[in-house]
Length: 261
Image (tube, rainbow, N blue to C red):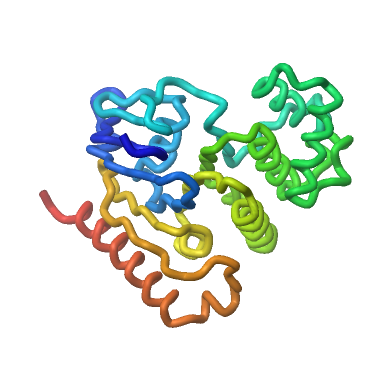
């Protein structure tokens, strides 16, 4: 069994209605994969299956060569709603997560690790604040820092920047890329989005899900170098061509759904 995150013939549905159909996906260790698709294509469901929050009706999931059963600390999850405890300071939120991941770590060391994780996302001066005292972008950075502090080798992100304004969204994309690029060993990332530009800017691969039910309709390599310059990349002919290819793939899938039976 090869390493990384593997989904083999995964099916899932609710009350007899299929949501995902025969999903085959391999994310090698250290790779950043953008999972793209329209609303209702099952992106979040697939992520929750990988997180162990749901179980497939059929098929198998593996992480690091072992069958995936239930949630685990080897898989960090970042949702759109931040999920920080409001009655705890930011550093205490992170220290709590570190304690669950490494219970033998002394309390002082947990707080030190928490401050280090916050510094990695540019929040080294807000550890003693409560979540309600932070902007939405800061809370999302804190949620990312918490996932990094746990040290999970697999990071599952469900549209984490979707509720942010364009400026903060772009800033956090750059923060995430910087953290991912400088980590040793690199974290494996599965990043759910419905934004084509975000998928291309972040990912080494873009996996596209079609709808009704969700299934893999394209798996594209993103050939751009790392340390990406946003302005130059978005203006390049190569970016525009790949963007158009993805848009056509999504449009064709929409037309298929609208065609008479």
